[in-house]
Length: 356
Image (cartoon, rainbow, N blue to C red; front, side):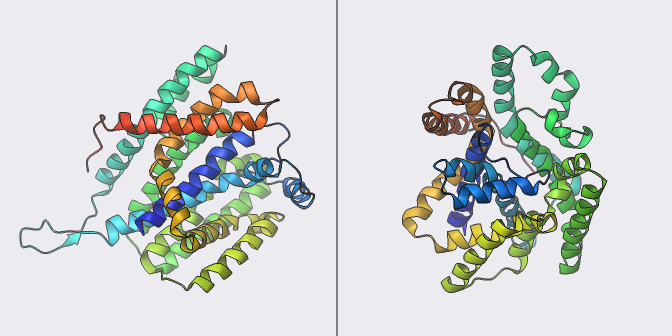
């Protein structure tokens, strides 16, 4: 499963990286990520059915952010494989026991692991931003910087989208919340009813948040409530998943593709679209030949570093290519993001890893 896990990461980071560039282009169809607008889906459908010559840009702008649910699925699956199905054989009597640490130790380890990954990219991005913009002292006030370093920025501010910079770094705080949910709740009581109940409760909470107002929904979806569905799917797949035939995966791929497209038109269905994205992604890697699976898997090995560095590449490049030579800008951006990611991965070899 390792090569397929990495392939899933590869698909996810390519979608995220291209989305985070394309949706900054003024003409691109905007996504429904933290809030919902049926008009965005209608506009995307029009571009799709009219064979717009910039269709790839519209595609990644509207749908590329769904790489995040794929990452969350892999994270949930990985936790089960490591802490529930993975056993350590270090007992004095030679017996095995689950390799699950105490909650505080677990959270400290995962916070330090995320911090080690984030800090270099964040520091360099801040420096570049100060050099290129005149409002650095406002954007990076001491409280915002501390909140980002503590990975609570999306929780403590009512409008996280106006505070977090670089924008994709909201994911670090989200993951810390999901780690807490796992170690405190979902790992202690491993039944299906609790997992399903948690997903349904979060779905209902988002329905209520939308009723109150789009600002409330925006805040909720920047935090764990909006991310539980794919994360729980990863946990469920790790605990109870089973293999299907190629025909089964093909059927799931076609069905999930249709549901992603048509589910994007209605708010209640849109909340379930991440589930179909995950199903489609898993089915895809099960169907891909080795000639495509291996390159995607290699990209997946770079995905963590690429997630950290691609906002910096965008900050440097997009201003020069936003209104002209757009496709040249995308090619240069992708190349730069890969190069920066490989450099970061090399640097990380010399930074001590977090220890449990």
